[in-house]
Length: 266
Image 1 (cartoon, rainbow, N blue to C red):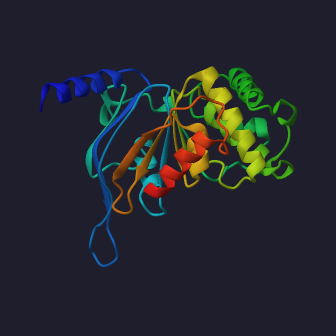
Image 2 (image 1 turned 45 degrees about the vertical axis):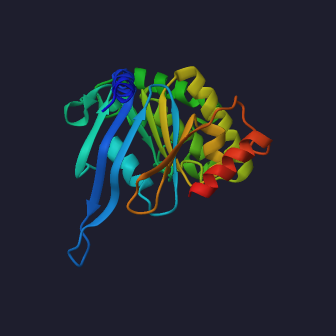
């Protein structure tokens, strides 16, 4: 290892010792198949996500994007490699409540109101109910749904349900927010509105965000950097910084160049 490589590695290590930063080293994951042969889904993934950044994970279907997100969240354990949060290995990490996960489906409980669905994320601890309610109302206000706190999921539009799911993810005040195609089921106009609101919330709360998407335009509009995975087994094909000011218009010339570059990589 030469001096320049050592300096760069030291800088990356320092960066990943900051709370909210994420570092993946040589992550591999495989699953057993009915014929007894292991299926390798991810292979030697190295990734350093600085605190407060927004990263998109992009790639063809089946390349392991959601598996990678599940490994970061602790839902899955890698078969090889290490995950670190703020310089602490996942096996020694204790503050899992600082990591929140917004799934592709909103997973709202149909018998609970919007407010009660958001409050649900706080019920596992010993927080007093009055404080839970206050924080749930604050989270709903953050996604502009204060007027609908007593509405049930079936009374809400798809975009509103996504906002409730986002509020539930934010109510724990996470340092890290993981999102698995959270807006994929929305129409284009509602999705664009959610993009704007997510960026506003990020500017206010400064979480680290990693989101999985199939939508190249979404990746360009939202992310500081787009990590493109190669087809199975998933490997980092390219890590592309998006170096243009926000708000970003996916129809302007600079955005189109990034979109074309990323599509060529998938």
